Structure formats: C-alpha cells, structure tokens
Amino acid sequence: MKKLLEYINSKVLIKITSLKTASVFTKIIAGVLTSKAIAIFIGAEGLALIGNLRNFVSAVQTISILGFYNGAVKYIATFKEDTIRLSRTISTIFYVGFIATILVSLLCYFNAEKINNLIFPFYSNYAYVIKIFAIVLPFYALNMFSFSIMNGFSKYKILIVINIIGQILGLSITLLLIYQRKIEGALISVVIAESLIFLITLVGIINRRSLIGLIQLKRVNFNTLKKLSSYSTMTLFSAVLLPIVAIAIRSYIIEHVSYKDAGFWEAMTRISKYYLMLVNTLMALYILPRFSEIDSAKEFRKEVFGFYKTIIPIFAIGLLVIYLLKSFIVITVFSEEFRPVEELFIWQLIGDFFKVISVVIAYQFLAKKMFWHYIVTEAFLVIITYVTSIYFIKIYGVEGAVIGHLVSYIMYFGVILLIFGSSLFGIDGDGN
Image (cartoon, rainbow, N blue to C red; front, side, top):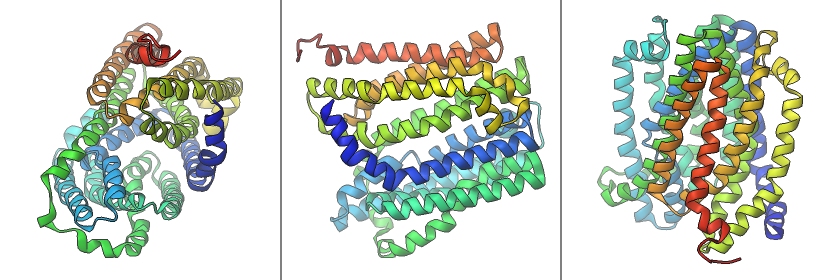
C-alpha cells in the first residue's frame, strides 16, 4: 500500500493534474451543459433518441478504425526510433484503416433508412442524420490516426490542448444547434462533434509533417497487421457490443414502458459516466501500466488490495455523497421533469461500485494480453446485462434497467474472482 501511495503522490496525481484533469473536467462540464440544454429545449423523450444515436455512433466509429487506436499508440511508441518499422506501422494503420472507414461510411450512407428504423423506433425522418454521419466519418478516422501518432510520440501537451479546444468547439456548436433546431440539432451535433476536432488536429499534424513521407503503400505489412489484431479484437468486442446492448435495452424501454422513461434511464447513465471519468482516468494511468510491469501473483495481489484499501474507500464515500445530493444533481444537470431519475440512483451507484472493483482486477486481462479470458468475460457481461435488464424491466419498469446493471456487475465480479482467485487469495500456495 505504501508503494501505491508513493506512486500516486509522486506520479499519478502529477500526470492527472498536468495531462488529464483539465481535459476530463472540460469534458464533464461540456456534458453537463449539453444535458441541461437537452432537458430545457428537448426533454426526456428526445434524450432517449439521442442516447440511441450516441451509442450507434460510438460503435460505428470504433469499427471504422478497426479498434486500432491502443495498438497503434503502443507500436508507434515502441518503433519511434526505428524508421523502417515505424513506417510499416503507420502505413499499415493508415491504408487498412482508410479502406475500412470508407467501406463503413458507404454502408451507413446507403443503408441510412434501415439504420434509422433500428435506432429510432417509431421515427422515420432522421435518415439524413445517418447520411451526414457517413460523410464526416473519414474525418473522425483521420483524427484518431493523428492522435495515435501524437500519443505514440508522447506529445501529451498538444493532445490535451486539442482535446480541450475540441470540447469547447463541440459544446458551442451543440448548444447552437439545439437552440436553433431542437432535437434535430442535437442529433446532428452527435454525429459531427468528433469529426470537427480534426480541424484543430491539423495543427498537430503540421508539427509532425515529417512523418507524412513515412506513409507508403508498399510498406503495408501483414505481420504488423497481425500484431495489431489482438488489440483490435479486444477493443472491438467491448466497444461495439456494449453500445449495441444499450440500444437494445433503451429500445425495449421505449416500446414496453415509454419514451420518457427511456430518457430517464439515459439521464442516469449520463450522470454515471460523468463521475466515472475521474476513476477511469486514475485506473488507466496507474493500474494498467503497473500490472504490465509485475510478473508474480504476490505483486499482483499486493497492487489490487493496495488499490482497494486506498482508493475504493474514497470512491465509496464519493458515491454516498452523490446519493445524498441526488435531488440537487438531477435539477442541476437536467430539470424538474427528470425528478423520477432520483429513484434510479441507488441501484446505479451500487452497480458502479461493483463495476469499478471488478475492472481493477480485469485490467490484468489487458496488461498480460489474456485474450480469451477477456473475450469470454466480456461476452458474459454483455449477455447477462441484456438478459437481467430485460427481465427486471418486465417486473419493475425502467427501474429494472438499473437493477439489471447492478446484478450483472455483481455476477461479473464473481466470475473475475473465480478466474483470479488463486492469485488474489493464495489458493495455489503462492505467497501468504
């Protein structure tokens, strides 16, 4: 535990303060202001539609870049001093990603009506929004490609500045569109926001323009693609299936409960996302790199329980404070119309607690490239989340969705403990 505290005091908090805090808080503030505008000008019904579109956009964006981002950052950082290998990596990511993005864009554009019918139940007049998304999608892909290069070369300050400016630009355009065109403006802002950041990223590209010459078609390499595939598959699996499940659950609420209740669930999900951003940032900066370094069950156990003893109590207190302030939070982030969201807090907060203590351990899958363990547990989580949510929605209405969230993460935590039981509790005799 002492080592964890020393690390957090000397490195993690400094990194978060200097590299992440401004960006994370800007994102949270932008999200809160956007949610407030939606509550005032559109209402709960509109929020449900926006939630479905946002999940669809998130899944398709990940597919369009083939989940390459994390792998790209790793290998660019590894080969940044080796021109030949760097050229193979960048060229492979660029050309393969370009082909994938164009194919996805064409599929979205020419199937806009079908997609509209899937993500906008009982609505059939937003297909043009899908077509706009298809047109701007390549700019999102170029933006993520540029980000991976800057991240790989440790250009953190440029990335943070771009993210902050991008959030401010996206917020400004979103608020303007919502004010002028209400629900249509909100939907358009969802599909163009991420792509607009590319205009700002061009500044970063200019600073790394010497790398453009390394992007050559002849350098596209199958072995590089194979190395990226494990990162790609793991990223695609969760980043695509979880949003699809969210769409399915929200659509079920719309059809069997009401649009307004689906909006209430989306509101609770948004609030959860805002406070989890800080915890996820800490885990990404400390847990993943630390797990990558250690090579014994004893050290793994020490890090996990150290994190539990130091960070989890603070997180639990934070959740308690959020629960006590739930009325204030709902009114501040949304409006009086969203008062029923208060009934969802207790289940969501407890579920998020189990989610965090599970994810802390599950980071070991990524750190040690435990590919099949990751796939199987994520598949279990996706299936059980959908099944439990639908089951409890039938009994309790929209409250069943958050009860399903809690039950699914309790079960997920149980599976994680079964997998890592010997490492955590010394069942195999390793350590004390």
